[in-house]
Image: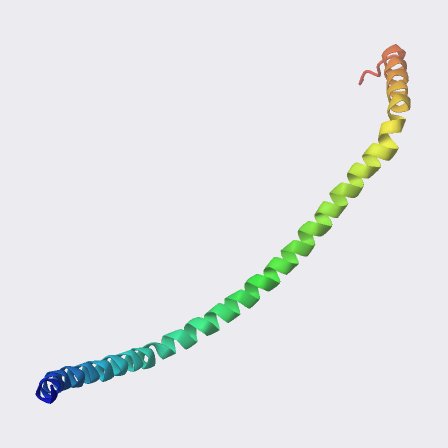
Length: 111
């Protein structure tokens, strides 16, 4: 039984060493890749921060402007509904009277 265990250990040691070497090599490659791409990641993060800040400010300004425009249109609609709509019959009567007066008055001809 001890000889079989020694033979298995003798076969496993090279595989463990190869796994260790490839594991260290993979870790070194990962660290090297991260170190090589670190400047690009820093520049990308800075650009994302700057463009995100500018876009956020522009979005806020346009949001306020369009909100104010919507408020103005809403107020105009309210004025139209609650002020001009009840006056519509009087405006219609006034328009008919004005057209009648204009129709019966003599036209001024240029000389």
